[in-house]
Image 1 (tube, rainbow, N blue to C red):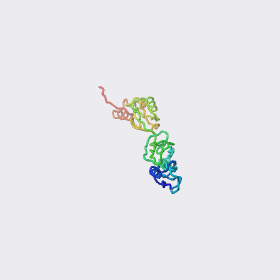
Image 2 (image 1 turned 90 degrees about the vertical axis):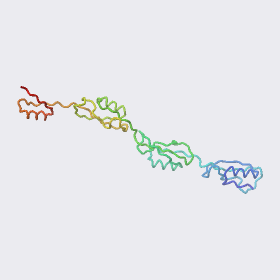
Image 3 (image 1 turned 120 degrees about the horizontal axis):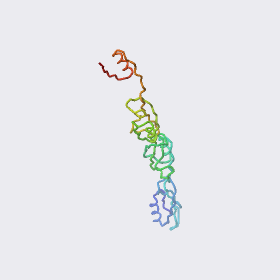
Image 4 (image 1 turned 180 degrees about the horizontal axis):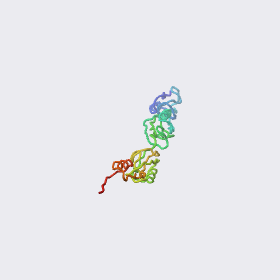
Length: 231
């Protein structure tokens, strides 16, 4: 009779049949059984067969490969669930900046979508940490036009404001926010404060006024007063 090979590993079943003077044929099929396990035989175990005849063993080759699902644009939680349902597991999560996907959205996987891999394979999930960060140029002291050109060239928007200054040349940048060298999101706005010359002030007429009154009037108008006497 044909020895029982079902449930044995292929090499064990083959040896058993060959020792019983049978030829061995093998058919590999997908199965949930571990790869290499005999899951069937023909003729079946216990059947009488001529010595030298062939017994065909049906052998599991495992579950076969599965395709990595596309998870781009899904939240990290949903993407993880989709990957697990495909018979795979998330072994690493890598955060990376993205100009396309919002913070927390999946940008891809490694291995990539549609790749054929064995069940249970570990997948690295790539998740957006938000827009890329860039260093803000330092434009203090530059003219408004030069500062604007430099900032827009670096990928930032510019919001100019005006502030009178007696120490910075009119039209030049006094300060900026964010500061030069700071990291900021590409496409965000940098506010620059541009110097304007102080408005001219009329000098009060104090000729003939008492000294105290003259001093007071001039200082109230924003002037520094130096006293000189004439003989």
